[in-house]
Length: 316
Image 1 (cartoon, rainbow, N blue to C red):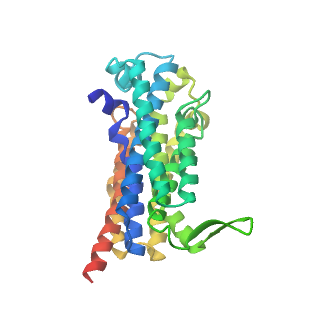
Image 2: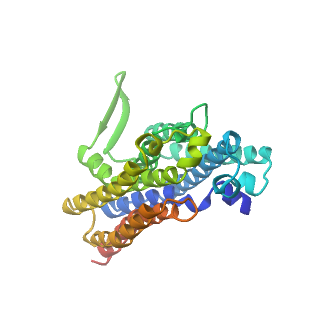
Image 3: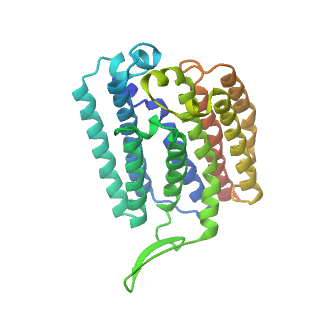
């Protein structure tokens, strides 16, 4: 079990589950509706697929690593640390992918074609992110794809699966024509809501790549920090959090968030402290986890305050 949990890096699954909770909190607050069946299907599909992509990433790192010493290889990679058999790892990946597909299909059958299309797109990105001749994680585009898919698609689906019977987004055939329509205000609000998880998740990837710069050079992983340099990468790391807080302010001004969500701004104190610490030292073992903590503080506080807004509305 220890080997499995390390292989899928269970501690990082908050990166996908917090956006799910954020979207769920928002749909409860703004639309006062909830489908427990659809939520469970999405939760299980999302969790198993997130674990599968992480396992694929660790497996590919194990197979392609040129440098076979150091924390990133001997301690961080579960296959080496626990002497896991390659056949067992491949079996785990296959089982996780199968589970994700099954629950994803069940979700689609209970919702609409839009969920299927976004699900297929997300699955495709998730696989090529870690697998193939040139995985996205080994390119300068890892932050964009990880932040975009996990930060936007997950919260969007987390909202939409409860609103499939509404006219907010529609895709249908009429007189031989494929028609797609959507409520512009709805899309704008969701887009602004997802800025925080997009930027926080992108920063997890960025922090990971900054910490791994020396090993990535040896292992031929040409990530964003290698292209722009460590100094600019650290500056980008800081500004992405500043932009995230700016988006929260805009949401409060637009009254998309409940007034209680102003409490999320208080997290700037511990988040800024974590930023300063990471700026001083970029070590996988010592400071990488600060980016995960910042995700929990920012996206987690937004989700919690949305649920608080739901409770306040019920009381009032």
